[in-house]
Length: 289
Image 1 (tube, rainbow, N blue to C red):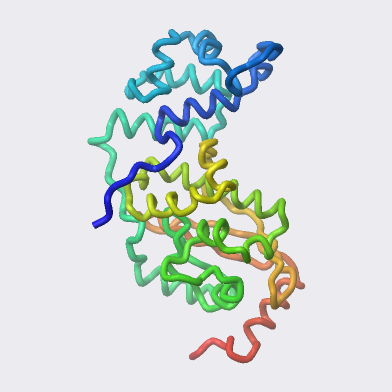
Image 2: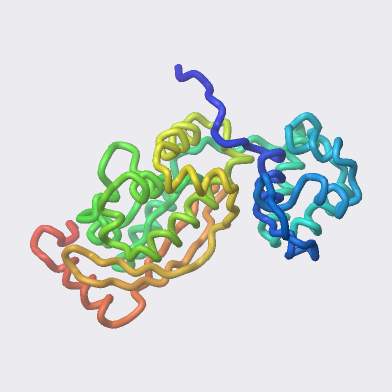
């Protein structure tokens, strides 16, 4: 049995509050930024004053020595820190886990198997490429069209395929995305993992993933910044080694109670549709009946 290990870089409510203070520039809250600053962002004294708190109390919050702030305190901090709606939801989730752990249902395991009907749905979606993801971007199932598109990329290599591991550890990810696209996807992946941490941060599979990726500077830097992101539709452009440039609109559908979610890769244009059809028709890629 694996030993339980803490995840890295200051987790939970304390780390989140500290990271947001350090990322907020003084001029964003009407303060002058002139003069030498020992730490990035707002000083603790400045945030405490703006939020109507004592410096000592804010220090206890940021060091994890006080884990039960009131709703009024959290609301004041959220306002001063200029939190986005997603960040406010995350802050509320972190606080709820502290205040009402006994009432919060335990999440399903990261590796819980999907229902057979969901696997059947994936097959029915062919020839639209689609896959089923678990809570930490772990690949649970996929249809023939999606496998045909991604198999040459190395996404499915290994016994635990995971988008995070592919993106940060597989050199192919740097070749199929432009630098700006790679960075945007990296931000999204780390943001979702941070958002998932309140529910799955104690799961061994989650901890294994963070430990593996934390050795990569591009991941470690983002992880330490505590970004927050939630699953949403988007777009992808792949520089495919066989089919050339492929463009997709990514649609996201939540599935059941296990926090699985479907990604549908809908071809964006006729060129992408034609290229995918050519891939599916190539010898060896025909779907068996």
